[in-house]
Each structure stands twice: as C-alpha cells, then as structure tokens.
Length: 249
Image (tube, rainbow, N blue to C red; front, side, top):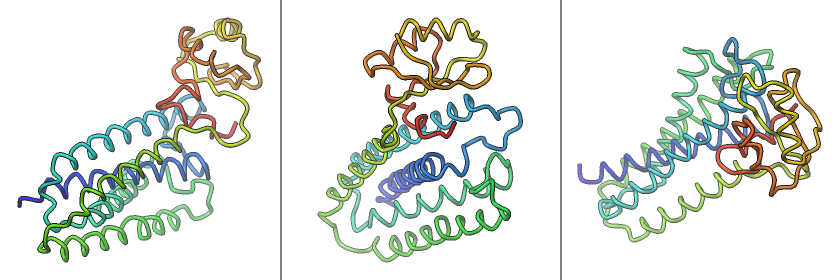
C-alpha cells in the first residue's frame, strides 16, 4: 500500500501528541499522577519528576521522527486524511497506556487519589482511547480512495506547529512561579548541595528531607551552574526539565 508510510507516521505523530496531552494535563496541570506514581521504591519527588522528564523527552523524539517521516512521505499522501491517522495514534496511546500502565504493570492510574480509580481508567480509555481510534479509522477508510489533496502538506505544517506548541508548553514554568526546582543525582550529600547553592549564588526556599530535590531563588543565567555540581535536571534550562516547576511540593 503506497500510502502506508504516510499513515504510519501520522499515527506516530498522534501517539506523541497524546503523550504530551497526558503529561501536560495529568502530570503537570491537574497532577493526578506521575509516570511511576505506584511503583514501589520510587516514591520520592526526585525520581518522580526525573521520570516525568524522561517521558517528555521520549515524546519529543517520537514527534520529531514522525514529523520527519511525514515530510519524507508527503508525496504518498494520495487521499489520506492526515487528521484521521493522527486520531488513530492519539487513541492508540491512551489504549496502550490504560492496558499496560494502569492494569498490567500498575505503575499509575488516571486519578490515583480517587475512591474509584477503575471508573476513571475506563472513562479515559473510552473517551480518549476507543473514540478517537474509531473516528480516525473511519476517516482513513473513507479517505484513502480519494484524489490527491494539496492540503496534505499544509496539514503536516499545521500539526508540526501544534506539536511545537505542545512541547513549548511542557517546557514553560507555571505562571507566577518565581522559583527554580533542582533535582540532584542520588548519593549527593547535603553539604555538596549547599556547595552547589553557594556556587550559583542561590537562596534555598525548600528541600526534601535528603536535599535531593530543592527549590531555589536564582537568576535565570545562573541555573546552568547546578549541572556542574551534581544536578540531573534544572527547571528552566530546557528539555526535559520543564515539567518540574509544575510539581507540587
């Protein structure tokens, strides 16, 4: 099938956009769960925000690969409704997340503090998984036999803009947040963390009991200095640390 590569990369882009949707809405804004909320031994804030950051980084890689693939395969988009392929990928992400992450592995639930977490899982699975996949599949089935659509290239560019906007949102700090969150590598002593604070001329605002995660007041141009003193991620310094300032402490 000559347009199968275009469909494949459209599905991949929808998959990445669903990951951004999940991470931005559920991890950052609503804070209903983190990626590994229910994994034993990963209860501290350091590891939760670290893995949320890795998750967003992976979505960037998938989105970039999908956009490149769509651009390469754009001449094969003969009558393929790109939005349909994206909807299939969007729903596929939520279906896989529900079955694998919620029910088989149990690493998180949609709303872990709910009295009925299964009800939230099933609602999310139906609304954001099954429904988009069904609509996307219908669009693909009805559109494949159509004529060449000049709008395909425009669709790729529009979706690229949406993906870039989602990524930028994942990187931005919440409004009114004057502080910076820093996650240090395991094994760093409190005295070494205090040394990092001194080197960056930063003021400590909050820390967890081990000082593995701290919140500081520091000028933006000095944030990078923490990386020279054992920091794994520093909010405000780019991928994948943008989600960190959204975490409740």
